Amino acid sequence: MLSQVATTTSFPALDRGDLQTLQVNLGYICNQSCSHCHVDAGPWRTERMDRANVALIPRVLRARRLRTLDLTGGAPELHPHFRSLVEQARGIGVEVIDRCNLTVLLEPGQDDLPAFLAHHRVTVVASLPCYQADNVDRQRGKGVFARSLEALQRLNQLGYGQQDSDLLLHLVYNPLGPTLPPSQKPLELAFKTALAQEHGVVFNQLKVMSNMPIHRFADQLERAGNLEAYMGLLRENHAPANLDRVMCRSLISVDWQGQLYDCDFNQMLGLASPLGRHLRDLLEPLPEKAPIQVGEHCYGCTAGSGSSCGGALRTEEDDPAARDL
Figure (cartoon, rainbow, N blue to C red):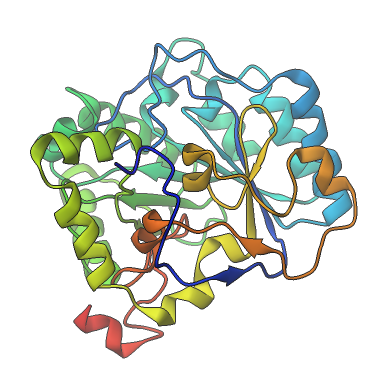
């Protein structure tokens, strides 16, 4: 079962490239408990990064001259130092990405959060697995679609996703079951058309991601007897051309305790990064061409058009062959 660490894999060996992005999981507390969540986040979780580790983040950004701080969770906005961290990162010219579940913007005490994000020009990457209410509520909880639309409308009113605005609003799509996601561009068009016509909502880009067969989603697959079939689907659709673009080549993931992993998925499986053990290690010189920890779950990033925190790795625009994937 892939919610446990795999000891052997047929996945190709990978080496790290230039480090550009620091992705930080601020904790597992979340106001939602989605069925596909590989983090197993929820309202009952209490883990969150302490002040000492949070203080290391701006130091690492400066020392490594990183381009991007990617904040995730759980709901990263619920961390008590989220806003101060955003302010510090933006103050040194680093792009900040907030991986937002949207409904957190409607939580008590968060009324001014959309305006805060807009003021600091934070890029919002928001989860919305479908443009139809039934599908969203089935994956993310009853009433989530309506609340997500309200949050999107608030962001739009501040300029997010609007034409000629520098306030970027991207949506993230995950399949509802054990299937590969469809082509990104046609699905983006369908999302934009439906959300604009039916709800007056606009956004910049749709990021298509595969569901990773770990933790909550893996448990769901195993109960339904679909885990092996899904893993077979991922392996059969492995595209070697995606290996050059996987996010782990340029990203390092940090858990709530400050420990380092090659990606968010490795973090959930406890596969430590050869690059270092802790945030403080990033303040020191780093090894060149450090290997990346790989496992069977990595096929989730290379199957079909590929999948990463930035969406599909290949689209029709840069690879005509992706039309057939």
